[in-house]
Image (cartoon, rainbow, N blue to C red):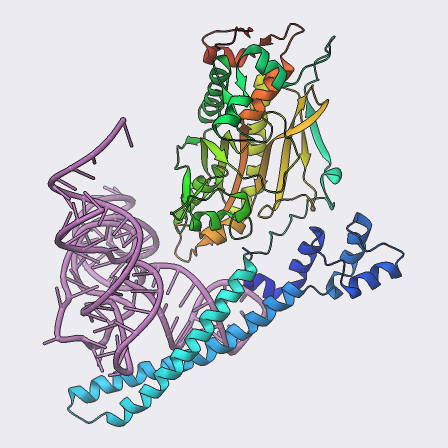
Length: 467
RNA sequence: GGAGAGAUGGCUGAGUUGGUCGAAAGCGCUCGACUCGAAAUCGAGUAGGCGCCCGAAAUGGUGCCUCGAGAGUUCGAAUCUCUCUCUCUCCGCCA
């Protein structure tokens, strides 16, 4: 959630933010006119956004106008109702005094009865406006950081760096589904029988490999990077989902339990970030760094037909998550180091990857800046997302009300900055290892860093199916 | 799931015939005095939110709200009523 006072002070800030994210109504005649006058099509293109941004101060956006109107109305009513309450409080004391002195107070009582009724009506109005304003603010995305490049989508994400070389293979690489089935460590058919599409069963060395991966990740972050390991609930209430921004806008993405007000977490970010919801942390405690392994549950609504084969996109998957609570002055340094911590996993596993910066149009709802880590998949001959590392600045902290305070006398509480990143998605790491470490016979070498977690095993060998 | 008790400021804890209570007291913490320094002692301060005024801003002034959450009774609620949440004790069930 954004700060209403910041919007009040500088509406152009928010206008610019929405334009950079490409949240423009291209059916609006004013927008169409502006673009066609410049010889541009009324479509979400970089050129169109650039033009609109140059004229940002004049581009009207309904949602912003609504927010400003509601804010003005709210303050108007507040002013009036607070004046009445002050009057009532004074009169109440007067009544108390008169009663104590055995003086009559009937006239005051009658007058205050009327004032109280008036207050009640105005209080209801304030509550209604508050609700409306909150509902609106909750659907406004975060403001992209100044360093985020303008873009309309994935194709505009600049590559920051690369690490490792895809291994040259003298044979056509198989994908992880073929390899997994031949090795007898992956069973998608029976998972479909048990539950449905987008679920999987790992067995034997496959299950062991999965467990080895997350254990290795947790150990690395805990021992080398200074994170505190957390094992949180896998279900959370609606308040937590609102705190990190999954609700109210993305309810369709979530699995909700029937008969309870609980949701399955789509990522450990939700319980880990909301851990300090409503609290004021001592400034000296910052930064606080959490890592946690959890299964994650996503309905993947709207992704029909995408990544339907294999483990890339599942309703349930395992992930190790990194979460930081940082001082606002240092949150961007913390983003760099968090990204480096996630990269370290790929480096140790010897997996080739690259880092991209998400452009403004590809940025998630709550994020101010995001780096994606993409790992090389030989079967697809391209890089695929395996981690997403973001700074949310005070966007989540404001929603979840997470603050910090210094020691000094005049120290005022302020919102912390929250960050998180996958460190890493375990299932996709499993895929990357199986594919990148395959040989022509369909065996899979175990990366050295993982061998201690696999009882010293150096490769996964084909097994006869159990049945 | 059944029965009972409770939820007050950083902590402990008073406040239940509704009236000057945002809240006693103690502890903790901050600042100051004393001291070469510390302890002890003494003095002062010590919740958050939202408005308005002044101001370039920090500060400041002023009003409103908050005693688990929400609703109600009343001129007025930490105190009375209802609903919900959470904690504790006992019973039942259970990994």
